[in-house]
Length: 276
Ligand SMILES: Nc1ncnc2c1ncn2[C@@H]1O[C@H](COP(=O)(O)OP(=O)(O)OP(=O)(O)O)[C@@H](O)[C@H]1O
Ligand SMILES: [Mg+2]
Image (tube, rainbow, N blue to C red; front, top):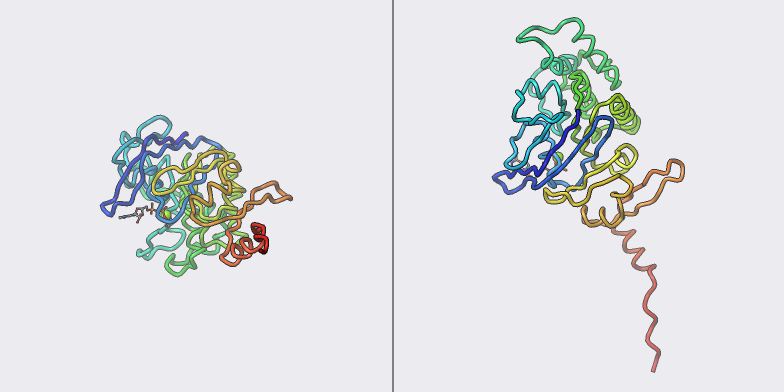
């Protein structure tokens, strides 16, 4: 199911928001949504999932406008891993994941054995089976993040929206999560992922959109878009872009103040004026 947005715009009373955003995510692909803090990435995710109604433009799911679908119909099609999940309720990890099954239940029916099975399978896919009975409030940040991914998996939707799903994950769990996301895309899901880690984006995203001040600053195939010029301009800090000679993937390293000073000192100086 293709997710597409045209001319999306939304403004908070604070003045922040997004403007004139176009985005298409087709089955089988992972599209990265990148950009600095406050550039509108989470706002875009909220608009794409129908949590926020757009002020301008439209989101379509498989050609159907989001506005024509009920919350429940949207939840059967789109699963979201939010950037800041709230965990005030005293649920266990398994109960949180089971919530992901609710859009599939008839009326106010209780979960069936198959829903429990789907929830346990989802926890297993993110290496979180051992956390099933733990209250989510007692989990570490990375453990909680994996439980939220499991909830989205249990929802078994054709579209997945991930807002910084790996920000708290250790190296192994980052790779395992994105290998899993890659496998889900290969099965035919359409995935959009907000990422701050440009190296993960370079490795896993087919295409990326770089946001700046709520607008698209650059968009296209990952390697052609994550360039020195685009990144330095959009993030407002200098980066070094190289190619990993093992994988051929781009490697992006931010340049520290010390590195920039060394570069400036090493760069050729104009020849000294001849002495009189
Ligand atoms: N609930 C809100 N009320 C008012 N302003 C908001 C709200 N949420 C976001 N904003 C503002 O809208 C702009 C975009 O915010 P958004 O959360 O989409 O940024 P982001 O790209 O996800 O940033 P980050 O990388 O920090 O998660 C920011 O200027 C932010 O301050
Ligand atoms: Mg955000």
